[in-house]
Image (cartoon, rainbow, N blue to C red; front, side, top):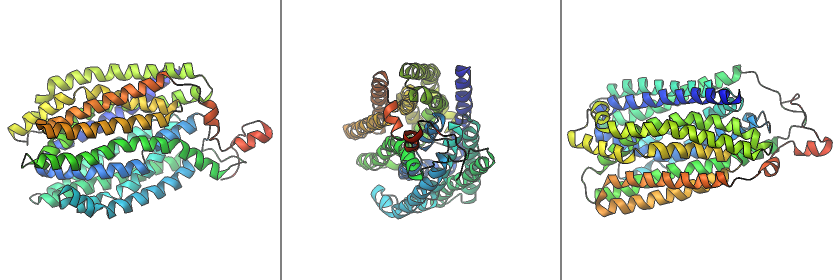
Length: 457
């Protein structure tokens, strides 16, 4: 029964993620035609900073809150999380607006500044939406996460095409319109997610509610996960500055090359990776209660099963991506020139192995968090990203051009998954440590029981 429930949850999330990624990939066809490779390069330059700030205010929230709720440690963890991460989202909005001009100067693209300001409000909306998703995942309801992911892409596609068409002929205005469509989509989905949350039946806070303890517990789980998730966007931000600068030393179209890699090749490779998202997210509420009870053997067995499912799903995808890379480049990105499509196909083939390794990194990181080892996942991510940035710079400098960045990404994911597997195999009982975070511990010392959650908030 538990296995059937796990697979059902994974299927719902994977279906939502796959539809979302498909919509995103299909969106790239008209978007590339409307913006061109140069416009796509500018469009992609905005997102590393956005993703990094988004990571600080939103990443780790769904997994952390889902673990707390599903394990029974704090079944109302989302309430203080709304306040904490809503404020973090507002701070991210302000920081991104303030860094718009410095980032534009560092990347050598004046159009980036306006795009950063238009995208900045999304940091707040995604933070709120992340708390909603964490709450529902913790209660075992995966539908809201899948529904908001699909709605997010639908709004972005419709708004993006409409606004880009409206400003067609002006590259800078078209790029800004495409970026603003992202903000519109996040605002709409945050409103939808909050509406779903308000309608859901919720438990009341316990009599011995300790607000400060709950906040510490929420931060105790989400901060390591956030620190882990920060590694990848920070690495991409540094890459967008270092690699483009190095490419400019040997190519006149450095921005276009970066756009083909990050805007086209990475999009195609990430499409099958979305299949494993459901396996990763569904594994947290399934593994957490076992780890919480001290059944580490059972938890590790379920983690191994999650990784096996991930490998089985991602391996055929990697083969398909490698085999059909030229066809996909010709069909999806037909607006690119012949040499640009040939470069895109070679990049996708180089990165096809990442369909497997990136999927395994996603699932193994979630398993480590569910086992009570989020700090290990964070350390592994940072080490692998440091390897990626260093190798990208070395490979591009050696004359491999943007293909060197693709090769560095492959090595980065491989390092991360090997380190994660090492820690999963060596996991020990973390139940006692996890208990230190529980906001009810003072109450348990007095009466030896975990009070039911009926009282005031």
